[in-house]
Image 1 (cartoon, rainbow, N blue to C red):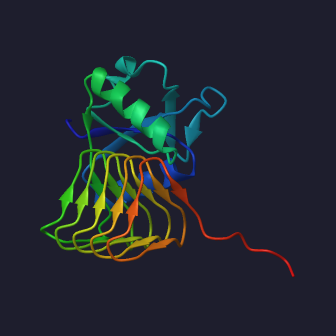
Image 2: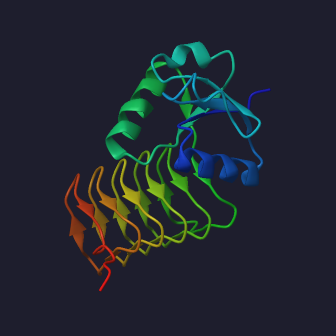
Length: 191
């Protein structure tokens, strides 16, 4: 079998990615790698094979891998370690996402249910477009950028490398977010 997938990260995003993998139906989940191992022996009925210290040891269990961790810097570091261990990065597009055929999607990116990636949009390597998020026409998300739930980029907007639009944040037409920046909505407050 050449479609065994290792999911790196067994937290909330990792579990969401696992459900997306099951919905896609292209891969069999070999298990997870997570630094909570061995205190976390499994997620649902799938094993947590071990931690993220040495990915080479998972080559016997998996053919490909995806890093399913929301932290941009950690996702990048672990993606690089996977490449060094000989794993091919997998790109996942949930069957309930809408992706333009003219969009360019980088290796190791994840597009979740309800997300929309528009005409001639460009996503770099290791990007997360979370549930309900929108990357409109001609918008660009650089490597390891992250759009939270219902974040929105209007046409021509640019999200710099490893920048993060948290849940509900909207970028106007042609807006440019510098690399590493985190944009969040104001927190709710009790009056």
